[in-house]
Amino acid sequence: MTAGGIVLLVFAVLAVVVAIVLLFQGVRTVPQGWEWTVEKFGQYTRVLKPGLNFMFPIVERVGARINMQESVLDIPQQQVITKDNAIVSVDGVAFYQVVDARAAAYEVRNLVQAITNLALTNIRNVMGSLALDDVLSKRNEINDRLLSVIDHATNAWGIKVLRIELKDIIPPQDMVQAMARQMKAERDKRAQILEAEGFRAAEITKAEGAKQSQILQAEGRREAAFRDAEARERAAEAEAKATQVVTAAIGSGGAQAINYFLGQKYVEALHAMGSSNNSKVFFLPVESAGIMGTLGGLAELTKESSLLRGGGTGGSGAPARLPVTPPSPALPPSAPPSGPWDRS
Image (cartoon, rainbow, N blue to C red):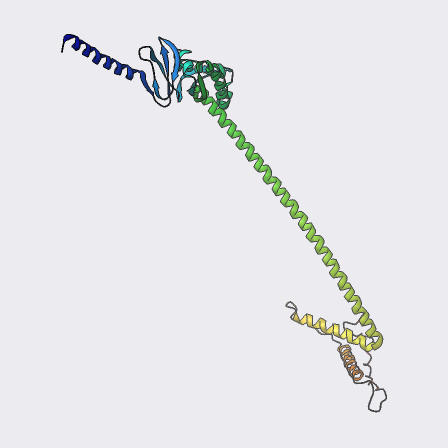
């Protein structure tokens, strides 16, 4: 082979190698979640999406590799003076996502530093306009205000701020002690209020119970009085009826009926005296003639009742004559008859 042929062969091999190298340089594979910017002679032209992409070697090159996933940014701790001149230490965290790779690559030089400084400045502004109590109790409102301000400021950078959260709000130690004393005093006050309310409720309940008890007792006494009056009324009716019966019996039986009833009462009185636990010894009346007369009257009444139940006539059809008991011998004037029927 001549020298010219060898030179041509070397150039051909070099051309093939260069072509292969340029081919590999022109093929780009972008991973998922990323976007690459393409610059042509240093000027932005387009964005490479995830997957297989082709570029013109030597003429085009990759400018910036932008992560399109949601990212977390820690906001460092700083001291903030509140509206009431209290100094607190605050730190936070921000969640953001790049929505425009071109703006994120060319509108701001250092994206992370820009977001961090913007968050620190707005935290001082927002918390400086609030009192310490509001800073501690209105954390959600502070987060919403910070999100609105920072998200609006980062729109030009191709950034979407999703959330901003304050992690720790640390007041000074003396302020913490003062807050602890205030909390203890507030809890003591609540405990005393609850105790007073409980005592009042207990007293009201007791008073209501006493009132209800008195009402029930009064109703019971009224009902008992009604029942007693009704019982007395019925007893009076029974006594009146018994009196009528006794009067009718006396009217039809005469003196014998009177002797019968008086003797019955006398015998009942003697029975009561004999059955009493305290009355062990008692004296019968000295004059026993009156008692015998009463017993005789009882016997005559019994015979009369038997004859009347037997038909009221003798064997001859004539009305039966009741035997007449001779009257008791008259008592001497100096010794009047004694007994339960003596009315003198």
